[in-house]
Picture 1 (cartoon, one colour):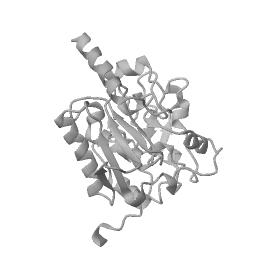
Picture 2 (tube, rainbow, N blue to C red):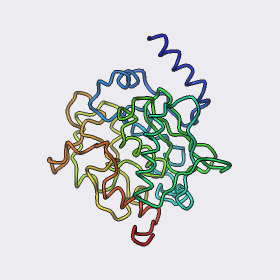
Picture 3 (cartoon, rainbow, N blue to C red):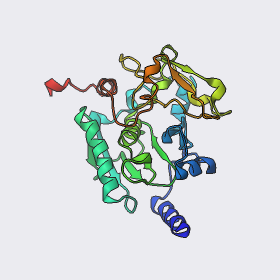
Picture 4 (cartoon, rainbow, N blue to C red):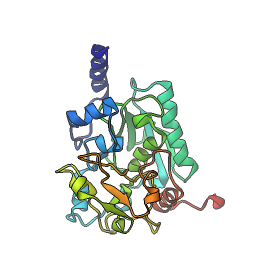
Length: 277
């Protein structure tokens, strides 16, 4: 069985071809945690990328550091008219996994003016792959041809194939960053720096409103884009503690978008109110 799994992993890497040039090779430790399922933090934090699951291009990294005048709220990263061409790469997904992905896309479409369309000849599009490297996505429309979103293979409802995780990664593709990066973060949650894995503190940075915005919508502790309480924990203790402690179990939920997530998405893409469509 072990040899079979190794063989499948090799085949997957051959199928995918090159990953994004900005992709950072994940660590053996993260990959083992994902494989074992023995983790308290979000699976999204185990992807080995920026803040766990975001593959950023250099201009995006510079904006976060304040070195780029164009912030990440720039409409350059939006998909024109909210239309996102996509393709499921061949050779990865079972029908059940394909159905779970489609349910995630439909959840976003039903709540907004976003439309996911099968890729034909569009220059810019998203390829969905299933490499054994965690859950991750490139962020926003990079306007350079094919970009990728990865969902490591699990049974539907597990790991990268939880409903909220599929939605979470596609919201990155639409241009969203993590909720706890927002400027006003410290008004709602406490970061327990002493419990964070040394060297991982940068994953808890917050950024100015000229770089990341909530589009006038209030901070949402239970957003589908929020880390859970144990993100990057070094000792099993909580690293993020909401001031409203009753929300701690809902923080980092993987069910789907909240009403506030939907408001942010519709504001970002200037969707008409539902009753005006």
